[in-house]
Length: 205
Image 1 (cartoon, rainbow, N blue to C red):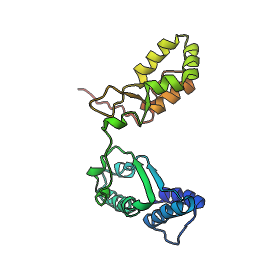
Image 2 (cartoon, rainbow, N blue to C red):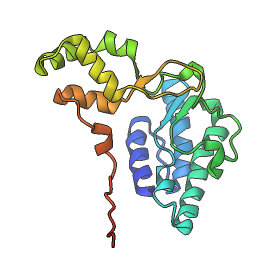
Image 3 (tube, one colour):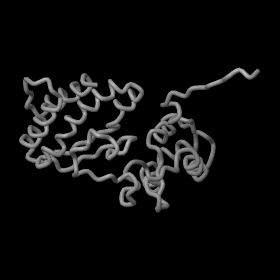
Image 4 (spheres, rainbow, N blue to C red):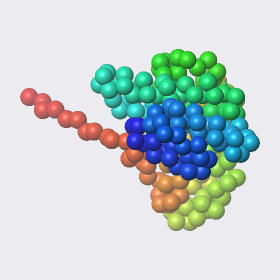
């Protein structure tokens, strides 16, 4: 995990400078935030996808999980201590951040998971699909020898239905599946294939 963080920090340090002698990723992240602000004159935007992936990969090993938690707590603590240089941070993950102790020092985060104002921020809405992907829809329909309307219905059947608010009718498409469907011109189960499906069987006497 540290090697991956180090690799990402090196990439951005090459752009914004401020490389320090310290090997501590938390210190380097703090210095990087300041360097980006100083070089651009603009506050920094921090985007983190799947912040909890390292923890989930070791959920059955409490010793390793505690070590990872300690590193991440110091790393993400910069989002509070350096907030004067940060415009906003957007963090995604499976686990609610208020349930993970790595964010215990942060009181400036808002959980927008089920906020109706952000229902379509993490997906492709029906309006966006029909407005921005007309050529792909038409071509896919032709390749499958169906009408445009039938193609839209099949896309909705397979890839629509994600909801990020309990009280909204707005649903969104899975971007990964949708892009793969257009690339292959086929209505496959693309999201399922990204996991590690296991078929379990047992002998019955």
